[in-house]
Image (cartoon, rainbow, N blue to C red; front, side):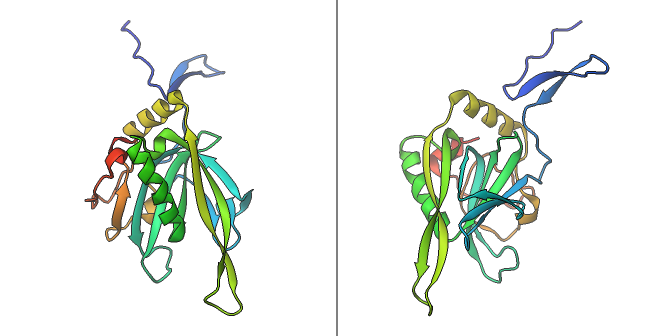
Length: 209
């Protein structure tokens, strides 16, 4: 018998209860191009899963891949700034959450100091909270919410696991890929399945997962 191959950092051995056979499986679940969809509602300041399950006004995630770009998505009729952040949730599923416009500018403002610390989003645990704003340009004035971002360093072992996983898998969301997106920043871990991407990498972001 040959020497068993070493497990990758994101793999485990799992025994079949019926046959007793041991198989190597990934810790993380991912159906290529179809991550679990978490959403941020800028009208209510609440997060949800698939537009249904309410998750409150705060989330903490560890990004594994991301892109910041401009595109006309979801039939909104205009090009807007978007940030698409992929992460692995508490059930070890590859997931995604998106933000647009002002929230994207706030996120980019966090990426910049990380770059100067030789870090990227995949090195940190990112806490996202909703902040209420007023729109005084309309009468009566309206309210809306933007996402605010803060971070603490992530566990080094988990960072290695997710980077190794992303390096070996194609991380993207199929229904938001377009050939006309204009990129501002993109991590190496993001895979453009359309093969149209010609985007600059942002400094330290280029060594991300």
